[in-house]
Length: 100
Image (cartoon, rainbow, N blue to C red):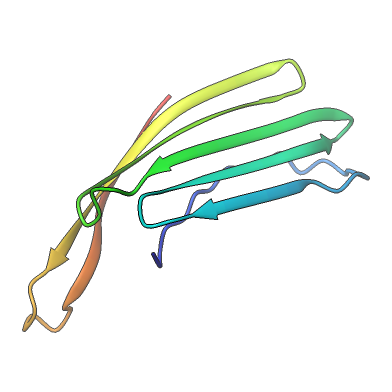
């Protein structure tokens, strides 16, 4: 599935250890994991997503930590088919919501 992006902002801190990133995507969903040491603290970020209703609602959950600070959240996006003959036929990204 082209065009699915997940982004997070990480502070610009010098780090010496490499971060490990893994990702798997199928027609039904995806998982991603980022881990390692960053700025002297442990960093872990994990996402699991559901693509089974594509086109339609895509949803994901995320969780992780940076040192002793933890976070978690959910989000979804509505993807809709654009009618052919409008000059933009295909699938379009309509909206995105993220909950803290």
